[in-house]
Length: 123
Image (tube, rainbow, N blue to C red; front, side):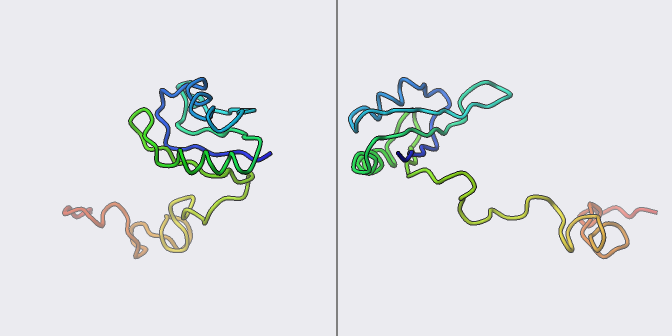
């Protein structure tokens, strides 16, 4: 059984509201709402399991882009953990010419430190 991923939800959306939203497309066997560890509120995404491919597709078609709680939902088939989209970019500042590590920027090293944008001269 595959899951649906629902993103861009309002932070106030509850599990019962989600079950109600998906009810016309068949029985929802599982709902998982990602919660923020710091605040304890929903993070605006969830996954739910629908029993059949046909019902999953119907739910995706009907609910993708639907406004719920002032936000347009993004509904698609969930991908297995570790199977994401394309990389989103560097995970840290720096790299071969960006940070202050070897070969990076910084004062006197030809890089772009904070002083690059300053009108003041340091002694």
